Image (tube, rainbow over all chains, first blue to last red; front, top):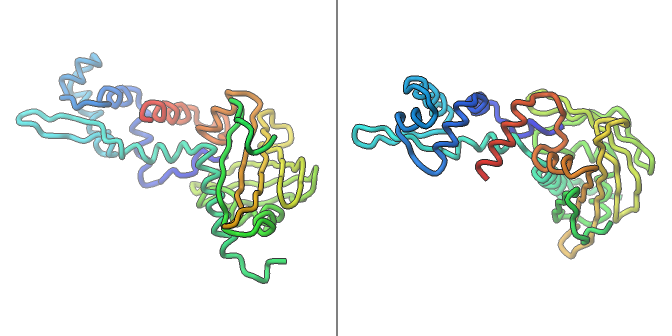
Length: 116
Length: 156
């Protein structure tokens, strides 16, 4: 019923980005620490160009940032990119908080003649 | 059930102070012309097929999401005690095996009306799922479902 409630069209790419298992693995690796490409590639048993491609996708949707550090480029997790995903998974509480918020607005605005 | 008894692992509760007298707040639950103005999160609209506000009566409606997705809804009022309590069954249809029971309590306050909603699901699993993705339709997009859960679990 509610699953797509707050899914914003303009940022829906975050969903595509994390639909790919390797990219989710990269995000998990970046949680809590920055890493360089070679580090990620080693941890995943993938080659660097493949990892770089995934990182590019993740950067484009704002899930990952890059931090130039001398000759190295360190990648980190940008949690703000996950906001549309959190919104989209709206559960019971979000649904009813929003509904009751609307109810409050409606009750306050109700024209007097409608009151019996 | 009272609003104050402890929640079981099959129940969810939400509450909010509404800025109006109790009879006005209660009335907003009793008629489609009111309900359609506030029921559902921001951006949702409803189309009603059947509406009869009485014990045993049914409200059949479709909720339209902003992205064009339609969500079938079926509600049957089980108990109506104006202006203090409404108990209803809620699902996608009369035969939906995942129907759940919801109780709205309306409490008078000096600054308005406190509305308390408690919903009881048939199993803990259904309850947990509703907490994450309320009323979600099975089979639509499993990948994204599991992703949502995955992401929430990881970053919370």
